[in-house]
Amino acid sequence: MIIAIDGPAASGKGTLAKRVAVHYGLPHLDTGLLYRAVGRDALARGIALDNAEAAAEVASALEIATLDDPALRTAGAGEAASQVARHPAVRTALLAYQRSFAHGELGAVLDGRDIGTVICPDADAKLFVTATPEVRAMRRFLELAGRGVAISEAAVLEDIRARDERDSTRGAAPLVQAPDAVLLDTSNLSIDAAFRAALDLIEAAMSRAGRAG
Image (cartoon, rainbow, N blue to C red):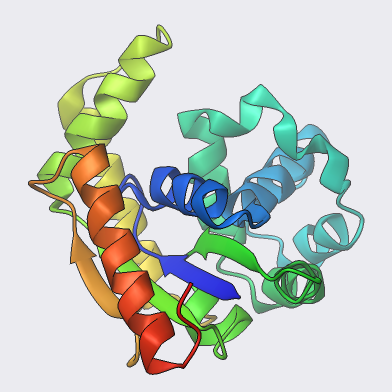
C-alpha cells in the first residue's frame, strides 16, 4: 500500500501523513527533510545553494541517519531546501532512495511536493493537501513562535508565497496536483477533521483500486 500526500508548505500534509502512517501501520517518509538536509550540508560546507553540481554531490553523499536533526525544522532550512530542490541533479540523486523506501515490503506513506507525480506515480492513493496562503502562514507563525523564533506573521506569509512561487514554477518536478490525486483543502478544518477526511478519501481510493484497507 503506497499513499502519496503532496501539497505546499504548511498545508498540514506532514501532520496528516504521520497520522495516516500510524493508522495503517506503514513506514512514513517526509521527503522534504531530504532537501532540507541537502541544504544544511551544502551551507555547512560553504557551498552556494545555486551551485547545482556541488549540491548534487552533497545529495549523493547524504547521511539518512541525520534526518532527525532538529535544525532541519527551522525556517532557514526550509528556505535552503526550496533553493536546492530546484536543481534536477539534486532531485535525481534523491530519487532512488525515495522510491526504494516507498516500495518496501509493507509500502509506505510519503509526503512532499512530487510524490504522486514523479516519485510514486503508481501510488494506490494520492492526496493533494492545501490551504490558503494566509491560513498556512498563520500555522507556520504559531509553530515558529512556539519554538521561540522571533518573526512576524507578515514575514512568514511573504516567505510562504515566495516558496509557493519557486516550487510551482521550477523546471524539475514542480509542485502540481497529479491528475488522479484528490484535493483536500484544510483551510477550515481542524487536524482531527482533516485526518478523518483524509482517511475517507484514502479508503475511497483503495476501494476503487480493489484494495480496501
